[in-house]
Amino acid sequence: MTHRAKKPTATIPWIVMVPFAVSGVIHLVRPGVFTPIIPRVLRRWDRPLVIVSGLAELACAVGLIVPSTRVAAGRASAVVLAAVWPANVQMSVDLGRRAARRRTPKAWAAFAVSLVRLPLQVTLIRRALGNSH
Image (cartoon, rainbow, N blue to C red; front, top):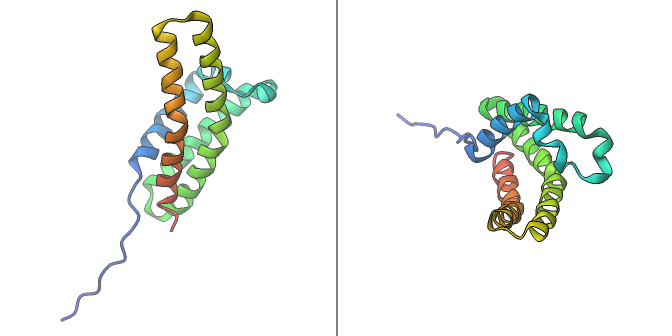
């Protein structure tokens, strides 16, 4: 009796799915949290961009859960993460300016955290793409 090895299925990238689910809900419930980090050149469309990005994050989170859509959702998640990267850069720029003005430990800590977050986005993109093969 021979057993056929099952082809391994991609696992849920929880490190991408959970933040997308949480952030997606916040985008829809409290869009004002995110409108200040929209890059200045896109500010005239800040609210629609926040809503669309929140819906995209939720769609990706759901897609990462469903095995039949996991590969496509992984690719889409990487695209969404790359698309929102300019907002994260804008947030770092704004926090850096605020820290320089206020000169408080709290302001400098917020700025430092925002800088650390930027390269972590690459890790999230890689994890999302890890499900695209």
